[in-house]
Image (tube, rainbow over all chains, first blue to last red; front, side):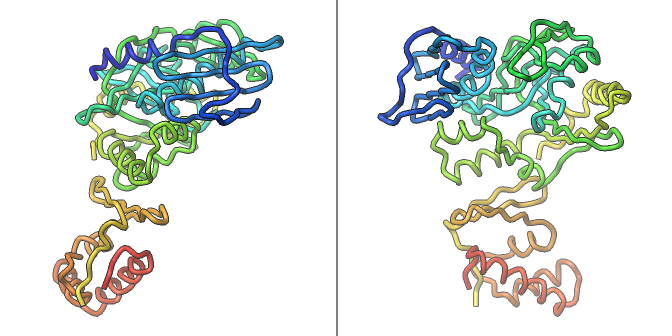
Length: 289
Length: 86
């Protein structure tokens, strides 16, 4: 499948309509607070008022009852439901935010709260267009390369992060997150790109960027985020399949560790160092394994 | 006695100059580098423990007794994990 066909498929399959959602799939009930992915179907019922159903070829259906929170609906739709849809269609969803640079997508990953979105916004301020926020969808269908699919155009940032990155603040995300939607100052990237680097965000007293080599590349891909679980469920991956996928990523994607202090006063120092490294081609010249 | 890899019990991949093995039964991972990788690569189904140690002693220019001890320990770990026979 060409990158354009992949993008078109994702757009078609992520279309949303409002309607009735079944109470279970494959004859198995899904209670409020639970989800289930079986074969080509995914059903999520976050609470009594909201239900999401995706079936391959039929898009996403949302059922809202009285009291449904539109903010929650947006969060679930763009998080778990989007990732499940991607996984069912053979894409690999990864918990990462990315920028477009040098003809490729450069992704930053880390635990929730590691600063992925803030870094993307700050790199945007320095001329690097946003590629995606929080969920990076990878097309792994072609053996000779991994393609990153653009998506998730809206950043979610805390007021402090908005102040640090000069992003344009929009409405609150809500749901107790304390975050606001924000528009990156350099805009976003719209077309698929080769996946060229994966950078792990770490905290340390000093700013440093180092290449990750050898078995550590494999170990770093241990992913317990829900996106990895959805992909494993959707693909019915055997342990061997999972191993081979991790090996492929470890062998083909340059990886770096980006360490910096989580100190607002030194935030710009870290971002400037990363921006410089990207401009100097540090990331593109990393050993590919 | 010849040492052989327990084919079908594991999958392996090479990343840079290291090898990662996964025991398919337990799901446990093993990372091999340096001497342990050299031992693993020397297991060809024909060499004995002594022959593997001799090969590495020659390769690393080390006394055979010292290498033999390392090889014995590491092969013991691989046997315990069910990744080699013999």
